Amino acid sequence: MAKRYSDLDWLREQGYRLTPQRLAILEVLKQADGHLSPTEIFNQVVQEIPGLTEATVYRTLNFLAEQGLVLVAHLGRGQLVYEFAEHDHHHLVCRNCGEMQEIDHRQLKQLYDNFLDDTGYQINTIHATFFGFCPECIANNRSGSK
Amino acid sequence: MAKRYSDLDWLREQGYRLTPQRLAILEVLKQADGHLSPTEIFNQVVQEIPGLTEATVYRTLNFLAEQGLVLVAHLGRGQLVYEFAEHDHHHLVCRNCGEMQEIDHRQLKQLYDNFLDDTGYQINTIHATFFGFCPECIANNRSGSK
DNA sequence: ATCGTTATTGCAACTAGTTGCAATAACGAT
DNA sequence: ATCGTTATTGCAACTAGTTGCAATAACGAT
Ligand SMILES: [Mn+2]
Ligand SMILES: [Mn+2]
Ligand SMILES: [Zn+2]
Ligand SMILES: [Zn+2]
Image (cartoon, rainbow over all chains, first blue to last red):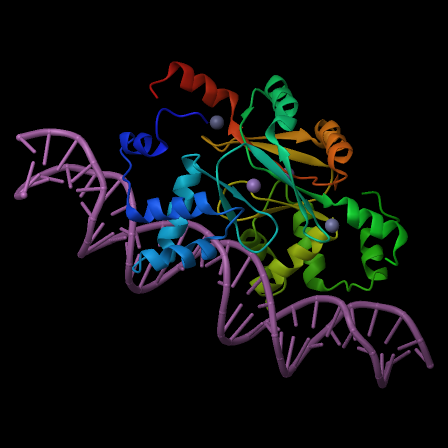
């Protein structure tokens, strides 16, 4: 998480290159409020970098995710979504209405500790998605028709 | 989980149809030991049902997963994998070597209860994947070169 | 056993994401 | 400021998965 000075300088020191494509994609994610799909990101960034291709967007997002600068998720929509990595969190998603609730990573601390004790696996998934039903849909279902 | 008599009769009562395609795909998963990709499933089932298409395999797997008869997972390989739903479990996967450890669903009971208390979300994800490092890779890393 | 309704299939075209390869361009060293 | 090395890009072809539509075939009712 906490990295020396700038993440960008750190990347360069690793031998990675700070290309305009990478910087622009990261910038879009930094500005965005929520999760963005590769297509949404492409559509924004291609304005600034006309030659940009989707392949580069996909590759860059994979790269940034590996480096821990962005978080990925399957939220049950068709596409993956990406988000600038600020605070560690996970999501609860309603299978019925798609409503989403964020939960702090610390809620999983105990579980991950148990995993380590029980199996020796050091788990570090920082942006998981759990599916189920939101309070509203549960309430509607109890009274409602179906 | 526990459904009256046969899952198959139950499906039929819901108005779903027991097509040879569905039965064969489910049978392959029932026989299989572990997780299978749609391609692996297709290659097996197309032997019995020559006209079978990939589209039907994908649709059938989605259907069986929705009905709770099979479990899906993103295990970090390229493709999704499917498995006949016997017992509720989750997976720990090593980011380094791909080694996998199964954990019982009951380990997440407490977490899901907390989700319900804190947010009202009734989570029922039964086959999640958590990524991290396996004991071997942790050991090798501590002593090893990199 | 036959028939009508309609869920499901195959087909074909599509969206989503990956990959090998040659050309480009970061960036450290001069 | 110029140059060499090599990480990264764009391109094009590919794999993975989805979807609308007309034809088919499950299956309940007769
Ligand atoms: Mn998020
Ligand atoms: Mn499994
Ligand atoms: Zn809901
Ligand atoms: Zn490992």
